[in-house]
Length: 126
Image (cartoon, rainbow, N blue to C red; front, side, top):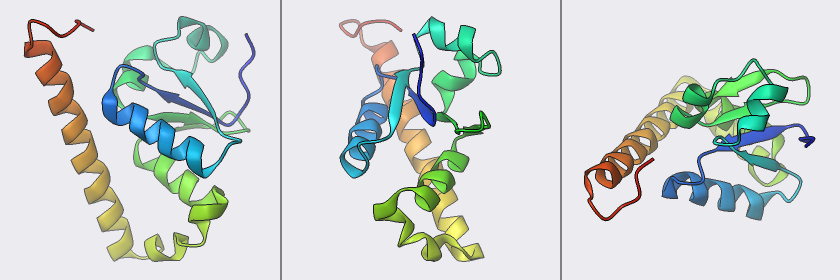
């Protein structure tokens, strides 16, 4: 299977990751996504590891540069037409702090939701 770049890897078992993906698909139909649980992607892109990709969002640029976590947000803000108009808001120290704080809070929520699933006897195990 061939994957078109840029390519965003996401965890389809994570509700926040799914919402992130759905929101991005709504903003830009040309983005490409693949499950971070798809073993084939690691064969084609050995620079990626499944463990890292399941912990944080990853994006492979058209040049095969690997971006992770907040770097993905920076890339999307600069490249998505609907969002790039607001990129100037993040082009200073305060904007960067707000973005990093927001990303950290989303990561904390994602970790809490995964922990909740693991503690639940009725939830599927990962």
